[in-house]
Length: 368
Ligand code: DHB
Image 1 (cartoon, rainbow, N blue to C red):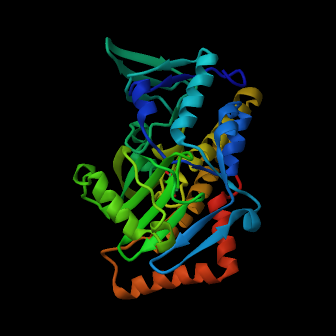
Image 2: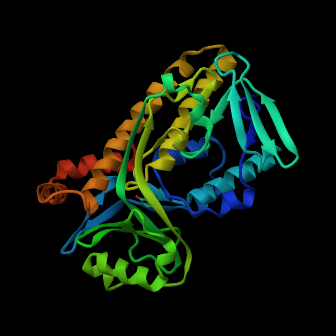
Image 3: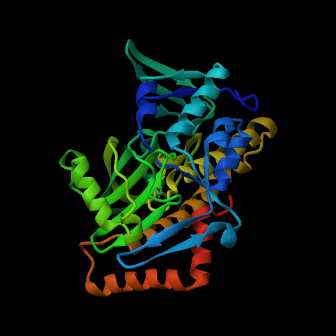
């Protein structure tokens, strides 16, 4: 219970499953502030790794963009799974009502003041009545479906490639992130700690992680890193290996009556730039303020403007993630003209301080 508002959390999976999933790991300073405000940042503040910039490179060269100098804000490396663990612990301390293995099957009456949910449990079907329902159930969740299609414009683009990611027991190749635009395809060197590396390579959409041995991954990853990093790469056993296909999706309405959509339930940006989790946090910032405003003052203004405010920020992040993705990936469907333009985009970023300033502002996170 926060701000005197009680909540029930319904989760389709087990807690163990939720905590076993490896997700993104770069937090904007706004996200860190939100977590501190919510009182769940003690471990984050002890364990986080602050990054003042990133490296971008290609086959021949690499350069650094300095966030501290250009935007005044660093970013923080701390795994999303660790945030989830911290949130669970805070909810446990609060004796919160969390119901696992309870898939929601129906959301109803959202246009009235008494919406309800129907969900399944091991022993049968249950009903829950609420004042508001907040769908935080991801792109594949059911929440969005209960915004009627007549009120739901959807914008979607799929990209013809995915990211094969591994979490490996090996020291990171560099103390900051390295984004590489190699002629063999994109590669990204990230990390979770000084002993744990998170690395990605672009692969065709239909690839299966089972087709990629650790050895094949390391060979390809090394070939895609700018030379001075490739020479330094240390490999190690992989703990996790998975493929995420790249897509851009925005649901044009994030609120219908008393149903609110937050995070991937309402939008997905391509992962380049690590905006997904940060957008979920800004959605929750707008939505929770709106709910507090309503319950404490009977004021509907925050709820009425939730969708517009959240979507403005989503589209700004989409613009950046889409641009960064297109610039850094090899696109089998694009012609020579387009490829040359992308090379020029990269050259411009390397040479123009103004372009680096734009990059730093967006990467470090736009204001709420
Ligand atoms: C990570 C993911 C991203 O999408 C990104 O742009 C940077 C880092 C990560 O998982 O560490």
